[in-house]
Length: 572
Ligand SMILES: Cc1cc2nc3c(=O)[nH]c(=O)nc-3n(C[C@H](O)[C@H](O)[C@H](O)COP(=O)(O)OP(=O)(O)OC[C@H]3O[C@@H](n4cnc5c(N)ncnc54)[C@H](O)[C@@H]3O)c2cc1C
Image 1 (cartoon, helix red, strand yellow):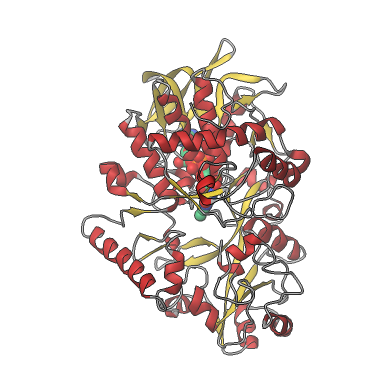
Image 2 (cartoon, protein in one colour; image 1 turned 60 degrees about the horizontal axis):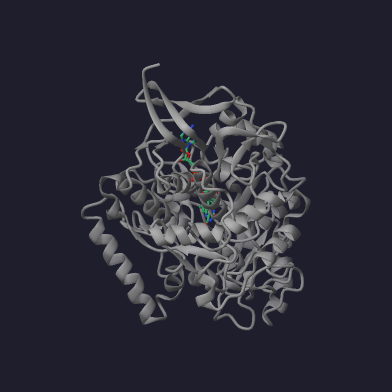
């Protein structure tokens, strides 16, 4: 062994889960070391929209939203069903508001409530019509100083003009910039700041989404003296005398043993980059069908392996092993491809999604986690699980299509690279895509008649608050439905991907790793996607991975400090 170090708490992984655990432990006066496998920090969290799902949060009152613990638990019980771990669900609902209050008070986090952002199944018992999802406030990356260059940048296809971030609050302005002076000014200000930034930085420093979230957490961690070792994977746990006492980390090619007096927190972000595990758990991959991951390549399931090496157990009995999203593949000038996740465009008016036979298969305005299993099922007998998002000229100019933004963004480079297909007629488009032409003509013909009245008799698009939230308010009478009748027509192909994994290490309400007899392993915690999802493999609302990641990080930090696990709504 080359060197050794000592701390109270050792955290592996620098995403939302890791930082939340580290900052909470530090708040309680503990000495913390964070280690990160990759040369960049932030993990999948940095790629994300940074949205958190926090029932009964204190922002709701000001927004006039009513919510209760009982409603939230009813919703989870109903939606997750018999895979719900009731004790963990209660720990989440009880601690999440306290975590948010405490983090906002300390300046570790800053969020804005989206009061009309409904749960993904808002009409189920206990579902919310809006008020449980919060988005991170903008953050100035320059506050990170020299660490800014070590922050994982967002996925390239989700930025514009060489690294300019576009957040959820910016999108309505982007859609309206050619129609509204206020929106044109908003976009103009964003661009001016970006071009100024580019004189001194490799990318824009106006951070939004998950970059803003993780940068704010990191800046606070650094200010509070938490060291973060980059390029330093945790490779082994040190287990002796019936507890985890630390871990071995590889740093600069040397093995360093770190003693952790209180314990080790695994926050390595699950296994979205572990081909072997995915081959076993993802049915479509096992059948040889295409799948492109979005998560960083370092998320290879190290946390699971480490936990299992000391008796921890892997919980696979979840509805879905991962949080699905459809992605299109954007060709890059160097010949590589970068995936683009389709969160919002599927349900916009003037867009529909079809499989190779040219027929629709799902209510496109439902969540990405509903869309992908429906696509896989509809393509059960096909060589690939794939679909095409199809729209007309009016819709593409208004909303864009995948990585192509709305007008005035030029369609030309996307057509040239083959990312977007175009046809002067529906038949021509179908032929360009390799879709059954008669099938697509029939589908669009059948869709357009009722769509002119704002109706979708086949899938009832636009019939709940979540779908309408993602629609376009100016589209009357249904913000999610418009006919596809303005040629030319366009399409982009999508295949399955995941936002992160749901199957994971079995943990209890204190975030402690459980052994085969359901006993906590002393000194070992797992949070974020390393832990089996408290949502049981379902996706109840926006922010249901990062909300729990931060909450169980907070719970782990408190438990390590001996502060007790339960923190009913009021904060200390
Ligand atoms: C485009 C996109 C948008 C998304 N938007 C949202 C959203 O708005 N809300 C939401 O809730 N979820 C969202 N998700 C999912 C969300 O980003 C993840 O579920 C979440 O960030 C996982 O957090 P984490 O802390 O568990 O892991 P991560 O953020 O992935 O961090 C794990 C870190 O651990 C490191 N690591 C791995 N192995 C080791 C090791 N052996 N030693 C040390 N370090 C190690 C990794 O390199 C990584 O940096 C989105 C995902 C994507 C891709």
